[in-house]
Image 1 (tube, one colour):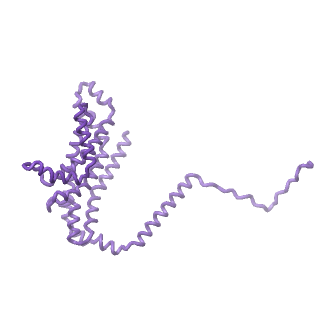
Image 2 (image 1 turned 60 degrees about the horizontal axis):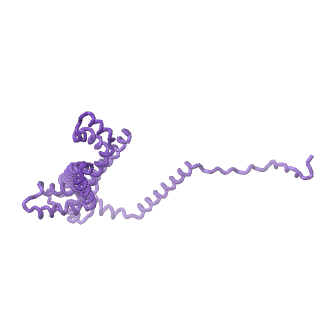
Image 3 (image 1 turned 90 degrees about the vertical axis):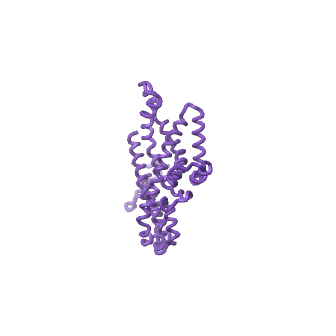
Length: 286
């Protein structure tokens, strides 16, 4: 029997449906929905740009096959070849000078460290265009009876190499310092001199560490060769950007710029893939 203070229970109606249970989305589901929304917005933007662009005018301005066809084979046999030559020569010059500067910065002789530090700070702060101009026109004025060997090739090598050496010196110094000190101490304990231990033990390991950033430096040098025009290149020493600019002025059509860009990508994209492969390989080895 129910007490005086007890309310009688109401019988549940037979036809009443249970209250719906709301399920909250999990964290992964929310992330997936946000990602899908981002993809959708990106695709809508691309579709809007594609619908608004005048593809006929773009094709006529930048993708004239007859203009592109008229640039070959000279664009490859002369312009691209010179661009690659300038890049390799400047890289070799900068690598040798950068290695010397890196060793000087790690030297126990204070004047060596001061000179290397001043060089790195100076040439990292100067634009490559200004350095090329100083090498091409300042050196002949300073040394009237002497010329840089190789003409334009030599001037581009020295000008771009001086700038690249400042960056490579810091990269190589970091690679040398990344080698455990125990390697050098173990070599010295075996009777090796300090220079021999550096050349035989430390430097090979340091180069394995810095190969990816050095490859990036080749990519940067490839693009910096476009500044060689300040040295007054000729038809036989012309590089890719200058060649495309001359073709643009002759044909009054921007298609040569697109061709030059594609040829640059032919060089830089494989190098970029090489950098990623080297980084993955170094990560696996670590």
